[in-house]
Amino acid sequence: MKQDISALMDGELCDEEADLLLGRIRQDEAASKDWQAFHLIGDVMRQPRNLPGNLGAGFYARLAAEPTILAPQPRRQSRFQYFAMSAVASIMAMAFLAWFAMHIDKAQPDVRMQQLAQQPASSTPLAEGENMDDYLLAHHEYSPSTELRGANSYIRTVSVNH
Amino acid sequence: MGDREVDQQLVERAQRGDKHAFELLVGKYQRRLGRLISRFVRDSAEAEDVTQEAFIKAYRALPAFRGESAFYTWLYRIGINTAKNYLVSLGRRAPTSTPLDIEESEDFEAIDLLQDVSTPENELMSKQVVGVVNDTLQKLPEDLRTALTLREIEGLSYEEIAEIMSCPIGTVRSRIFRARETIATNLRPLLGTSNDKRW
Image (tube, rainbow over all chains, first blue to last red; front, top):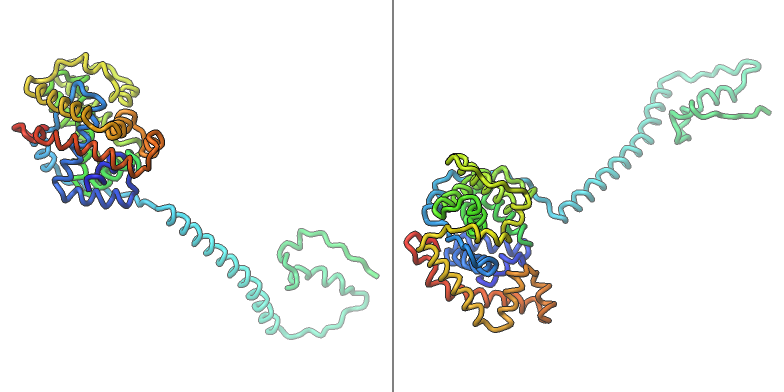
Protein backbone atom coordinates (compact mmCIF):
# COMPACT_ATOMS: atom_id res chain seq x y z
CA MET A 1 0.00 0.00 0.00
CA LYS A 2 2.86 2.40 0.81
CA GLN A 3 4.32 1.88 -2.64
CA ASP A 4 0.91 2.64 -4.14
CA ILE A 5 0.73 5.87 -2.11
CA SER A 6 4.14 6.83 -3.47
CA ALA A 7 2.96 6.15 -7.04
CA LEU A 8 -0.35 7.96 -6.43
CA MET A 9 1.33 11.18 -5.33
CA ASP A 10 3.47 11.02 -8.47
CA GLY A 11 0.32 10.69 -10.59
CA GLU A 12 1.33 7.23 -11.79
CA LEU A 13 -1.80 5.24 -10.90
CA CYS A 14 -4.76 4.77 -13.21
CA ASP A 15 -8.14 6.26 -12.24
CA GLU A 16 -9.59 3.07 -10.81
CA GLU A 17 -6.48 2.24 -8.76
CA ALA A 18 -6.29 5.80 -7.46
CA ASP A 19 -9.94 5.85 -6.50
CA LEU A 20 -9.62 2.55 -4.67
CA LEU A 21 -6.46 3.65 -2.86
CA LEU A 22 -7.92 7.00 -1.78
CA GLY A 23 -10.79 5.10 -0.22
CA ARG A 24 -8.32 2.89 1.67
CA ILE A 25 -6.18 5.82 2.83
CA ARG A 26 -9.33 7.35 4.29
CA GLN A 27 -9.71 4.38 6.63
CA ASP A 28 -6.05 4.05 7.56
CA GLU A 29 -4.40 6.68 9.75
CA ALA A 30 -0.93 5.24 9.14
CA ALA A 31 -1.49 5.63 5.40
CA SER A 32 -2.44 9.29 5.91
CA LYS A 33 0.82 9.80 7.81
CA ASP A 34 2.78 8.17 5.00
CA TRP A 35 1.09 10.55 2.56
CA GLN A 36 2.11 13.51 4.75
CA ALA A 37 5.67 12.26 5.24
CA PHE A 38 6.26 11.59 1.54
CA HIS A 39 5.03 15.08 0.65
CA LEU A 40 7.21 16.58 3.39
CA ILE A 41 10.26 14.86 1.89
CA GLY A 42 9.47 16.31 -1.54
CA ASP A 43 8.98 19.79 -0.11
CA VAL A 44 12.28 19.63 1.79
CA MET A 45 14.14 18.43 -1.31
CA ARG A 46 12.67 21.19 -3.48
CA GLN A 47 13.08 24.02 -1.00
CA PRO A 48 15.01 23.17 2.18
CA ARG A 49 15.11 26.74 3.45
CA ASN A 50 12.12 28.42 5.09
CA LEU A 51 10.21 25.25 5.82
CA PRO A 52 6.89 26.03 7.50
CA GLY A 53 5.72 23.46 10.02
CA ASN A 54 2.63 21.32 9.51
CA LEU A 55 -0.63 22.89 10.57
CA GLY A 56 -1.36 22.04 14.17
CA ALA A 57 -4.08 19.94 15.74
CA GLY A 58 -6.07 23.16 16.28
CA PHE A 59 -6.54 23.49 12.54
CA TYR A 60 -7.90 19.96 12.17
CA ALA A 61 -10.26 20.52 15.09
CA ARG A 62 -11.46 23.68 13.40
CA LEU A 63 -11.91 21.86 10.09
CA ALA A 64 -13.83 19.09 11.85
CA ALA A 65 -16.16 21.72 13.31
CA GLU A 66 -16.96 23.09 9.85
CA PRO A 67 -20.31 21.96 8.42
CA THR A 68 -19.69 19.16 5.95
CA ILE A 69 -20.12 20.40 2.41
CA LEU A 70 -22.17 18.47 -0.09
CA ALA A 71 -21.83 19.92 -3.55
CA PRO A 72 -23.80 18.55 -6.52
CA GLN A 73 -21.45 16.64 -8.75
CA PRO A 74 -21.31 17.13 -12.50
CA ARG A 75 -21.84 13.74 -14.12
CA ARG A 76 -18.61 12.49 -15.58
CA GLN A 77 -18.98 10.53 -18.80
CA SER A 78 -16.37 8.01 -19.73
CA ARG A 79 -15.17 7.81 -23.32
CA PHE A 80 -17.02 4.51 -23.73
CA GLN A 81 -20.27 6.09 -22.52
CA TYR A 82 -19.76 9.00 -24.91
CA PHE A 83 -19.39 6.75 -27.96
CA ALA A 84 -22.14 4.38 -26.82
CA MET A 85 -24.58 7.25 -26.41
CA SER A 86 -23.62 8.62 -29.82
CA ALA A 87 -24.10 5.22 -31.46
CA VAL A 88 -27.49 4.69 -29.82
CA ALA A 89 -28.61 8.17 -30.86
CA SER A 90 -27.51 7.54 -34.46
CA ILE A 91 -29.29 4.17 -34.61
CA MET A 92 -32.46 5.68 -33.15
CA ALA A 93 -32.38 8.52 -35.67
CA MET A 94 -31.90 6.11 -38.58
CA ALA A 95 -34.67 3.83 -37.31
CA PHE A 96 -37.02 6.78 -36.99
CA LEU A 97 -36.25 8.00 -40.51
CA ALA A 98 -36.73 4.49 -41.92
CA TRP A 99 -40.03 4.08 -40.08
CA PHE A 100 -41.15 7.53 -41.17
CA ALA A 101 -40.34 6.87 -44.83
CA MET A 102 -42.11 3.49 -44.81
CA HIS A 103 -45.13 4.95 -43.02
CA ILE A 104 -45.49 7.79 -45.52
CA ASP A 105 -45.09 5.52 -48.53
CA LYS A 106 -47.70 3.07 -47.30
CA ALA A 107 -50.20 5.13 -45.39
CA GLN A 108 -50.86 7.91 -47.82
CA PRO A 109 -51.94 5.74 -50.78
CA ASP A 110 -54.18 3.73 -48.47
CA VAL A 111 -56.01 6.83 -47.29
CA ARG A 112 -56.44 8.03 -50.81
CA MET A 113 -57.61 4.63 -51.94
CA GLN A 114 -60.20 4.57 -49.17
CA GLN A 115 -61.40 8.01 -50.16
CA LEU A 116 -61.60 6.98 -53.77
CA ALA A 117 -63.45 3.80 -52.88
CA GLN A 118 -66.12 5.81 -51.11
CA GLN A 119 -66.72 7.93 -54.18
CA PRO A 120 -69.04 6.58 -56.86
CA ALA A 121 -67.18 5.68 -59.96
CA SER A 122 -67.64 8.12 -62.76
CA SER A 123 -68.41 6.71 -66.10
CA THR A 124 -68.74 9.99 -67.84
CA PRO A 125 -67.14 9.62 -71.21
CA LEU A 126 -64.72 12.22 -72.39
CA ALA A 127 -66.30 14.96 -74.36
CA GLU A 128 -65.44 15.46 -77.97
CA GLY A 129 -62.10 17.15 -78.37
CA GLU A 130 -61.15 16.66 -74.70
CA ASN A 131 -57.58 15.48 -74.31
CA MET A 132 -56.64 12.75 -71.81
CA ASP A 133 -53.08 14.12 -71.68
CA ASP A 134 -54.31 17.36 -70.15
CA TYR A 135 -56.11 15.42 -67.43
CA LEU A 136 -53.09 13.29 -66.62
CA LEU A 137 -50.82 16.29 -66.61
CA ALA A 138 -53.10 18.17 -64.23
CA HIS A 139 -53.30 15.22 -61.80
CA HIS A 140 -49.83 13.90 -62.18
CA GLU A 141 -48.62 15.02 -58.76
CA TYR A 142 -51.15 12.71 -57.05
CA SER A 143 -49.82 9.69 -58.84
CA PRO A 144 -48.43 7.15 -56.31
CA SER A 145 -45.77 6.14 -58.78
CA THR A 146 -43.76 9.28 -58.29
CA GLU A 147 -41.32 9.85 -55.44
CA LEU A 148 -41.46 13.62 -55.94
CA ARG A 149 -44.90 14.10 -54.57
CA GLY A 150 -45.73 17.71 -53.86
CA ALA A 151 -42.82 18.99 -55.87
CA ASN A 152 -44.37 18.43 -59.26
CA SER A 153 -45.95 21.83 -59.43
CA TYR A 154 -42.44 23.22 -59.49
CA ILE A 155 -41.24 20.95 -62.28
CA ARG A 156 -41.73 22.00 -65.84
CA THR A 157 -43.33 19.14 -67.76
CA VAL A 158 -43.09 18.82 -71.47
CA SER A 159 -45.43 16.56 -73.40
CA VAL A 160 -45.93 15.94 -77.02
CA ASN A 161 -49.28 15.34 -78.70
CA HIS A 162 -49.30 12.94 -81.59
CA MET B 1 -3.74 9.97 -13.65
CA GLY B 2 -1.54 13.03 -13.32
CA ASP B 3 -0.96 15.28 -10.36
CA ARG B 4 -3.81 17.59 -11.33
CA GLU B 5 -6.18 14.65 -11.71
CA VAL B 6 -5.24 13.32 -8.26
CA ASP B 7 -6.08 16.74 -6.81
CA GLN B 8 -9.34 16.84 -8.76
CA GLN B 9 -10.31 13.42 -7.44
CA LEU B 10 -9.59 14.52 -3.88
CA VAL B 11 -11.61 17.70 -4.47
CA GLU B 12 -14.56 15.69 -5.79
CA ARG B 13 -14.41 13.41 -2.78
CA ALA B 14 -14.34 16.43 -0.48
CA GLN B 15 -17.28 17.92 -2.40
CA ARG B 16 -19.19 14.71 -1.68
CA GLY B 17 -18.67 15.25 2.04
CA ASP B 18 -15.35 13.44 2.58
CA LYS B 19 -13.42 15.80 4.86
CA HIS B 20 -10.51 13.40 5.01
CA ALA B 21 -9.91 13.95 1.30
CA PHE B 22 -9.56 17.66 2.00
CA GLU B 23 -7.14 16.86 4.82
CA LEU B 24 -4.97 15.03 2.29
CA LEU B 25 -4.95 18.17 0.13
CA VAL B 26 -3.99 20.20 3.20
CA GLY B 27 -1.16 17.74 3.90
CA LYS B 28 0.06 18.15 0.37
CA TYR B 29 -0.10 21.94 0.03
CA GLN B 30 0.27 23.33 3.56
CA ARG B 31 3.99 24.09 3.29
CA ARG B 32 3.76 25.58 -0.19
CA LEU B 33 0.82 27.76 0.82
CA GLY B 34 2.61 28.63 4.07
CA ARG B 35 5.65 29.79 2.09
CA LEU B 36 3.48 31.87 -0.20
CA ILE B 37 1.66 33.54 2.67
CA SER B 38 4.91 34.22 4.49
CA ARG B 39 5.80 36.53 1.60
CA PHE B 40 2.97 38.76 2.77
CA VAL B 41 2.84 38.08 6.50
CA ARG B 42 6.33 37.91 7.90
CA ASP B 43 5.60 36.85 11.45
CA SER B 44 5.54 33.05 11.55
CA ALA B 45 2.66 32.73 14.04
CA GLU B 46 0.55 35.18 12.06
CA ALA B 47 1.47 33.46 8.81
CA GLU B 48 0.31 30.15 10.22
CA ASP B 49 -2.99 31.68 11.33
CA VAL B 50 -3.52 33.12 7.86
CA THR B 51 -2.62 29.77 6.27
CA GLN B 52 -5.23 28.07 8.46
CA GLU B 53 -7.77 30.73 7.56
CA ALA B 54 -7.01 30.29 3.86
CA PHE B 55 -7.58 26.53 4.05
CA ILE B 56 -10.86 27.00 5.94
CA LYS B 57 -11.99 29.54 3.33
CA ALA B 58 -11.00 27.13 0.58
CA TYR B 59 -13.02 24.36 2.22
CA ARG B 60 -16.08 26.59 2.47
CA ALA B 61 -15.66 27.68 -1.16
CA LEU B 62 -15.11 24.13 -2.40
CA PRO B 63 -18.66 23.70 -3.79
CA ALA B 64 -17.89 26.58 -6.18
CA PHE B 65 -14.69 24.94 -7.45
CA ARG B 66 -15.45 23.47 -10.86
CA GLY B 67 -11.95 22.41 -11.87
CA GLU B 68 -11.48 24.98 -14.62
CA SER B 69 -8.07 25.79 -13.12
CA ALA B 70 -5.70 23.57 -11.20
CA PHE B 71 -6.61 23.20 -7.54
CA TYR B 72 -3.33 24.71 -6.33
CA THR B 73 -3.78 27.80 -8.52
CA TRP B 74 -7.24 28.28 -7.05
CA LEU B 75 -5.93 27.64 -3.53
CA TYR B 76 -3.02 30.05 -3.93
CA ARG B 77 -5.39 32.76 -5.10
CA ILE B 78 -7.44 32.28 -1.93
CA GLY B 79 -4.21 32.33 0.08
CA ILE B 80 -3.06 35.62 -1.43
CA ASN B 81 -6.46 37.25 -0.94
CA THR B 82 -6.63 36.04 2.65
CA ALA B 83 -3.14 37.40 3.37
CA LYS B 84 -3.92 40.75 1.76
CA ASN B 85 -7.21 41.06 3.64
CA TYR B 86 -5.38 40.24 6.85
CA LEU B 87 -2.86 42.99 6.25
CA VAL B 88 -5.61 45.44 5.36
CA SER B 89 -7.40 44.58 8.60
CA LEU B 90 -4.20 45.48 10.46
CA GLY B 91 -3.83 48.69 8.50
CA ARG B 92 -0.74 47.38 6.75
CA ARG B 93 -0.12 47.58 3.05
CA ALA B 94 0.06 44.31 1.13
CA PRO B 95 2.92 43.85 -1.32
CA THR B 96 1.79 43.83 -4.93
CA SER B 97 1.66 40.54 -6.75
CA THR B 98 0.91 39.45 -10.27
CA PRO B 99 -0.69 36.25 -11.57
CA LEU B 100 2.84 35.16 -12.45
CA ASP B 101 3.71 35.33 -8.78
CA ILE B 102 0.98 32.85 -8.01
CA GLU B 103 2.13 30.36 -10.62
CA GLU B 104 5.81 30.64 -9.80
CA SER B 105 5.63 31.19 -6.09
CA GLU B 106 6.93 27.72 -5.34
CA ASP B 107 10.19 28.52 -7.06
CA PHE B 108 10.62 31.93 -5.54
CA GLU B 109 13.90 31.49 -3.74
CA ALA B 110 13.99 35.12 -2.60
CA ILE B 111 11.31 34.26 -0.07
CA ASP B 112 14.04 33.11 2.22
CA LEU B 113 15.82 36.44 2.02
CA LEU B 114 12.69 38.21 3.19
CA GLN B 115 12.25 35.95 6.11
CA ASP B 116 13.09 36.31 9.70
CA VAL B 117 9.97 34.46 10.62
CA SER B 118 10.71 31.35 12.56
CA THR B 119 10.45 31.01 16.27
CA PRO B 120 13.53 29.33 17.76
CA GLU B 121 11.59 26.12 18.41
CA ASN B 122 10.19 25.99 14.90
CA GLU B 123 13.53 26.82 13.38
CA LEU B 124 15.24 24.06 15.33
CA MET B 125 12.63 21.52 14.30
CA SER B 126 12.78 22.69 10.72
CA LYS B 127 16.56 22.31 10.69
CA GLN B 128 16.31 18.84 12.17
CA VAL B 129 13.80 17.74 9.53
CA VAL B 130 15.91 19.18 6.73
CA GLY B 131 19.01 17.59 8.24
CA VAL B 132 17.46 14.12 8.43
CA VAL B 133 16.16 14.32 4.87
CA ASN B 134 19.47 15.50 3.45
CA ASP B 135 21.62 13.09 5.48
CA THR B 136 19.49 10.09 4.59
CA LEU B 137 19.39 11.15 0.96
CA GLN B 138 23.18 11.29 0.83
CA LYS B 139 23.46 7.80 2.34
CA LEU B 140 21.00 6.24 -0.09
CA PRO B 141 22.32 3.93 -2.82
CA GLU B 142 23.06 5.90 -5.97
CA ASP B 143 20.19 4.45 -8.02
CA LEU B 144 17.61 5.25 -5.34
CA ARG B 145 18.89 8.80 -4.84
CA THR B 146 18.98 9.48 -8.58
CA ALA B 147 15.44 8.17 -9.12
CA LEU B 148 14.01 10.26 -6.28
CA THR B 149 15.94 13.38 -7.30
CA LEU B 150 14.76 13.12 -10.91
CA ARG B 151 11.20 12.82 -9.66
CA GLU B 152 11.14 15.46 -6.91
CA ILE B 153 13.56 18.05 -8.23
CA GLU B 154 13.23 17.65 -11.99
CA GLY B 155 9.58 16.61 -11.92
CA LEU B 156 10.10 13.84 -14.48
CA SER B 157 7.54 11.09 -15.04
CA TYR B 158 8.35 7.46 -14.29
CA GLU B 159 8.57 6.80 -18.02
CA GLU B 160 11.15 9.56 -18.50
CA ILE B 161 13.17 8.38 -15.49
CA ALA B 162 13.09 4.82 -16.79
CA GLU B 163 14.51 6.01 -20.10
CA ILE B 164 17.28 8.01 -18.43
CA MET B 165 18.20 5.21 -16.02
CA SER B 166 17.74 2.46 -18.64
CA CYS B 167 15.49 0.35 -16.48
CA PRO B 168 11.82 -0.75 -16.47
CA ILE B 169 9.14 1.61 -15.14
CA GLY B 170 8.37 -0.88 -12.37
CA THR B 171 11.96 -0.57 -11.16
CA VAL B 172 11.68 3.23 -11.11
CA ARG B 173 8.48 2.97 -9.10
CA SER B 174 10.17 0.63 -6.62
CA ARG B 175 13.34 2.75 -6.32
CA ILE B 176 11.41 5.96 -5.67
CA PHE B 177 9.28 4.27 -3.05
CA ARG B 178 12.27 2.68 -1.31
CA ALA B 179 14.05 6.04 -1.21
CA ARG B 180 11.00 7.76 0.27
CA GLU B 181 10.36 5.01 2.76
CA THR B 182 13.98 5.01 3.96
CA ILE B 183 13.89 8.77 4.55
CA ALA B 184 10.42 8.59 6.14
CA THR B 185 11.59 5.87 8.52
CA ASN B 186 14.35 8.16 9.76
CA LEU B 187 11.93 11.10 9.96
CA ARG B 188 9.24 9.33 11.98
CA PRO B 189 10.88 9.88 15.37
CA LEU B 190 10.67 13.62 14.65
CA LEU B 191 7.16 13.66 13.22
CA GLY B 192 4.36 14.14 15.70
CA THR B 193 6.70 14.59 18.64
CA SER B 194 6.17 18.28 19.35
CA ASN B 195 3.40 19.42 21.66
CA ASP B 196 0.95 20.51 19.01
CA LYS B 197 2.02 17.78 16.56
CA ARG B 198 3.12 20.31 14.01
CA TRP B 199 5.61 17.85 12.46
